[in-house]
Image (cartoon, rainbow, N blue to C red):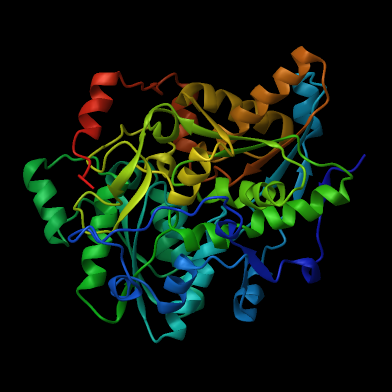
Length: 450
């Protein structure tokens, strides 16, 4: 009875997949924050390397992975696919559960899949310094790792609540050579403005993005790097699903249901988009389920509209599912899922009816994560617990219906630096957060007029 399916390094994909080539309708254009007109490459050059801008606007189906990037990928890729025999037994389900495990990367999550190429392309263009934001610290850790390999300075603004909750993430970033500060900070004009209004602000990804962008635009030798949301990031993450397709064939199985957790959208797109594209081109069409926290319900309760990617309104306007750029979620432990907006490509796919979305509370996701850890041995990151919860719900549905569907989910990272959250869960100290319509209405009232 096979448990894990391993691809040889020689079978690692040589190109990323871009779902824009297969969308039946094109995406809405990205707009300039001041003029509200569609942006051109020159508008993005203060922030991003030219090669990344080209990928951002590309509608080519395949984008070649440079050999220096593939060389670094070989440190952990291809990542394993597991059959969750232990979880199936614990649930008494008739379903077959598989999970793609991205926690084998040096940073412990899927985030290096895009950190490595972003650092590579910037270094190619002579850039020596990157700024970024991070929530839980998975992305900051990954960019710090990439910066160490390409000899680049990395400055990370970590959302204050996560900075305080996860000191060991900060220690890993510093081990890789990055500088990590709590956001809002006194290092930027916008950070000082936020702190002047509320010295105890817990921070948000929108604020941290504003701080990182502010530093980048002030120095021509500094560029900004983003760990989710943008098109080129989701393209880089497609390697997850491309590998999984080959591994599912090795297992002589094909998913009936695909589950991924969603915050900004990168790990969900990574596992789901290659399968989604396969279906759009006439192949098998699995049910695809995005799972998000009820405390930050962008897909299930947000509005599909143009909005800013940051709180200071320095970034371009993209059409996405959003809770409003001024939205500050509570300090729940899935720090990587605390973003006010959803990736435009994921949002577009949702509007096209290509997948469904659901939301769960913090405690029920931790309950699922503990069950998974005791059955499979891997302690998931709080973010990944949402995908575990979604997969368990699908497996229990199969049990009720007496069907033996194949379920595939993305275990996007391990929780070894998140044990304070598990300690709080076992102590009964984790709260659940829901928003009433009035609160959501207030958060959405500041959407720009386009």
